[in-house]
Every structure is written in C-alpha cells, then in structure tokens.
Length: 106
Figure 1 (cartoon, one colour):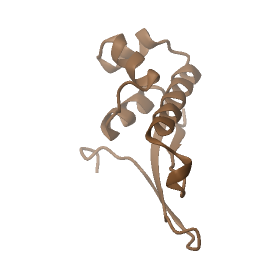
Figure 2 (cartoon, one colour):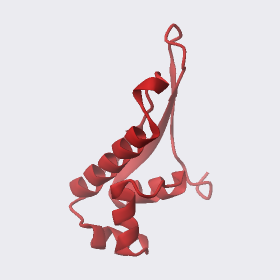
Figure 3 (cartoon, one colour):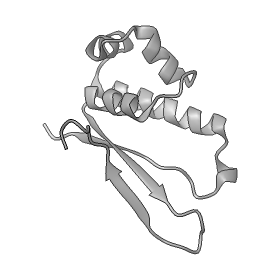
C-alpha cells in the first residue's frame, strides 16, 4: 500500500495565522488523518504505545507535538509526513519540501 502524504505548510503572511489558528489547523488535520485511517483514538493510541488521552490532547490542540510525534502519528495512520518551508517575501518564489525521514533509516 502506498503511503498517503500529509503536508504541513505555513502561510507566507504571519498576520494570517495566529498561534491559536495554527494549533487549530494542526489539530483538525490530525483528526482528519486519523479518521481517514479508520481508527478511533483508542486504536491509534494502542498502535503508538501511548494513552488515549494523549491522542485526544493532540487533536484538541492542547498539546503541541514534536516533529517526531507528528511523524509517528502520520505513519501509524498510513500517511507520510512532509514539511514545506516557503520564502516569507511575497516577491520571491520557491518552496522547499522534504519528507521527514527517521535518522535510523538514512
């Protein structure tokens, strides 16, 4: 089965995204990823070896996950995590996108 991709990007305009909005967007994305995998929070928690309330906190935006946690969450749900960085100046074009890879496999 081919892994699906979860791409996390941030708007070029900091005024468009407050910390609250970014947390909210991330929590909604995590809910969607889990839901599309067909797992509930308890099943995902079991697969990750964590308690179900940890998944609930991530999906509620009450906890800010590390990149390692995001990658584990996505992988457990059948997604590949990609992080994209874009230039801040609107006049400049270009984006850098890189799949997150476990250092043990590289």
